[in-house]
Image (cartoon, rainbow over all chains, first blue to last red; front, side):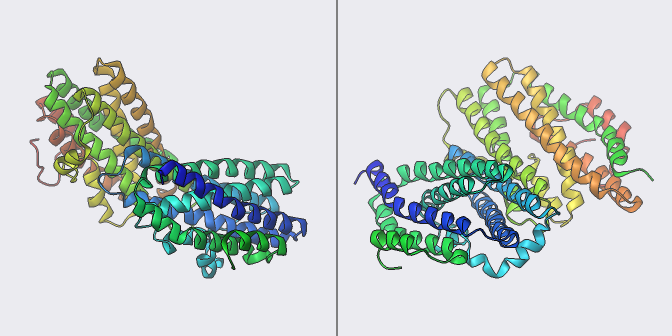
Length: 232
Length: 242
């Protein structure tokens, strides 16, 4: 299959994950979580943004000699966006709590949950060593993040938080497009296509389970996932 | 005791001599009408210096302490992005001078290893100190010097394509220098810290003098006089004449 056609198919197949994740987000906010729950929820998101900053920066630091200069520019832009998101979510937490947020303490609090953050999947799927896997992660995980942040932006009444999340959603969409661009180049190779086919559904399921970790799984979103990717 | 801000402001006044020498070195090289090969050689070193800066800073961001201020995370990652842009921009300048795309793999083989004529080579030396103040001072002083050198090149080079890129790089380097300034202002808030910073700066002036002279051209008497008048005799043997 040609790379463009393969990537288009991949994106179509992401749609069930994106829709199921949106439903989870909506269900969580419809449940009217308390302020303390919300703060804890956003601390988790803040830590995930920090992890993304760290992981993408590590990718740049380990870039091979022949790495494309445009590709490096895009990754560096993404790392900076992740740093900005880290700060933006911190500001949201301070806005909610009315007091300064100790980011170090928050990272330590969530230290035992780091393996359950989306960013941990970069290493799980070998994205730290294999550019095909990093690009797949970007397309799937950042694409899902874009839809989740956009849904949060719609669900939240507070204008400060809603506008912050709308901005993050826009950036995440751009990061997904970096993955798409990279996959268009890498997936001319049938071996790369095969590698992706072997793990794509597992990655989608992992991402969905991360979304459900705190809020529980709604029957509707579970059905969407299982119809698309098999049993969870 | 001076405040951190006042100390750093006064310290910056000392930088003018090394900045002046760096400016003279750049002018001497470009006024000598370098051949195309010499220019390619010069800019390959510059290109990989930008790449090394990008790599070293990205590594630093990936290892930041958990309690690092989020503003500093944003500023440092902005600098990584700038260095990545500069790497690409200098590559475009090389393609432009060459008349066709350069072979990046080949350039990496010949110029991809850090050498003493690249400012980034000093990062290894200062990293070995394992000391935040040394790195902040390097950023403040060396990125400020880089801003001067890129701006000088932008003024001398007649080609508009090249000049516009250098001018942009110069502006970014100035911004990076300010990141170092902000960190130093916070760190230099005790007499001990100020004394340590002054001592480090005196070493760094001579390190940067070596980098300037090794990268382009042998120092002239005027350059030597400027350095000696401002900083006195170096406390170690230099790899270039003084």
